[in-house]
Amino acid sequence: MKTHTSYALVLLSILLWACQPEVEEDNGIPLPVKTLVGQNAANTFQYLGSVEGIEDVEIRPQVDGILEEIYVDEGDFVNKGQPLFKINAQPYIEDLKNAQANVALERAKLRKARTELDRLQPLIDNEVISEVQMKTAEADYEIAQASLEKAQAIEANMQIKLGFTTINAPVSGFIGRFTKSVGNVIKKTDSEPLTILSNVSKIYVYFSMSESDYLYYSRMKNDSSSKKMSPDVKLILADGYVYDHTGRIDANSGQINRNTGSITLRAVFNNPDTLLRSGNTGKILMEQIYPNAILIPQSAAISIQDKKFVFVLDSNNLTKRKEIQIEGRSGKDYIIANNSLSENDRIVIAGLNKLTDSVKVNPIKSGSLLTTN
Image (tube, rainbow, N blue to C red):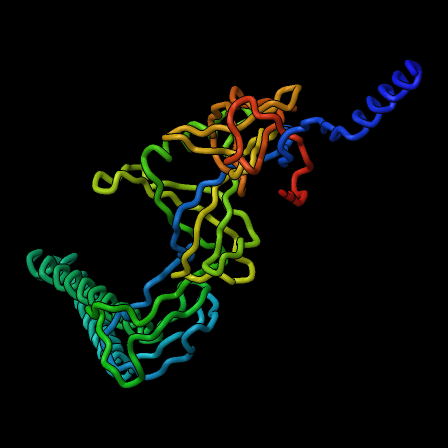
């Protein structure tokens, strides 16, 4: 009987143990975790800019008259020296003829004075006439000579004015909008130019930055550390695309505008396809290069007042909230100061609202689908 009782107790113990629920090990909250590594990054700065050709020349008349012909059309590309406009030249042709006639007259007067001087010279030598008469003749000759030179200068001036009746392109470039049409009277004193000729083989982009940004840029462009400002700049076009050619900052206004607290800089870009024209707008993109930066997704940081924190995992996968210092942005990532995080640190990059200090996390690969019961 005792044997049967012992056997029953053992059997009952086995059954009770088998019926107990299995206790699962607590691996923590499954959340995506990123292991940090050093990588190339660029902190970017953007500034609104306006585009101008390297030569924007106002085409203005040098003489008054009726606009007789226009040889080109708006938007045409013209070469240096190519005729653009023709002003009625007839008044200037007549002025030139009159000037040429005056030259001929004064030249005849000079010959007459020379002849008179030559006639009197023997008489002076033989003391037939007084020296006063000779000096008078010499003065008349000098007057005739000066009158001829004056007439020749007037002739040259009339020749120049006649040449100004054809307006040629001073540089190669693209023709802008016309402000006058054939038949209009045009004058040197007109407030508006006939058109603007733009040489856009290269273009300038003018942009402004604050005084503090300029001081930072000036300091970092010569920095010998790993945070050097790139000497090249990019141009983001109005449609959002990045222009194919990089440029360089080649000049600045040299003064801080006291009203705005900003300084204007100029970047030059090659424009071989003449895609860009005067009047375009865009954004200058400057980059500060970090060859071995620590990057974290912006979603991995939480803000508390004016500070930012991440959750770092220790060797037991327990969280610890850590304050970080942000040096800039590279795309959608933060660039972290060296003393904030290090390579091989592991941070939680999603589900941060579930975390406090010392919460256990079950690391999963970044981008994996999270499921919750």
